[in-house]
Image 1 (cartoon, one colour):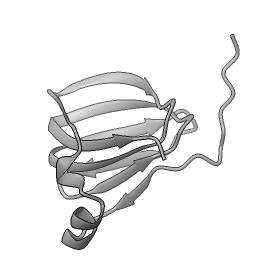
Image 2 (cartoon, rainbow, N blue to C red; image 1 turned 120 degrees about the horizontal axis):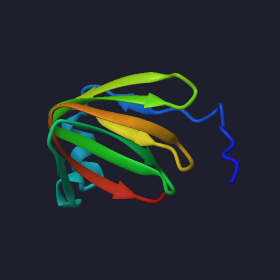
Image 3 (tube, one colour; image 1 turned 45 degrees about the vertical axis):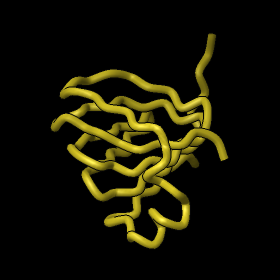
Length: 99
């Protein structure tokens, strides 16, 4: 199987996320995901929007982009993104999948 890299896929980070956006989208009612410090590959089949509640991670895309996300950031991962997560401080996030 061949994997094609879409060079137009970008991770979007809003730092810090405003309280009005959190309220507008009902982010505090979204599911929570947590992870201890670790390193692992990931593929986003669907778009994901998440609010980092605690911790920090470095996300490296296959094409070489590097993103550091931390508590207070609103992050949008596009569908189709292949990346590697390196959780440097235990992370906790609210997340929503799909558009």
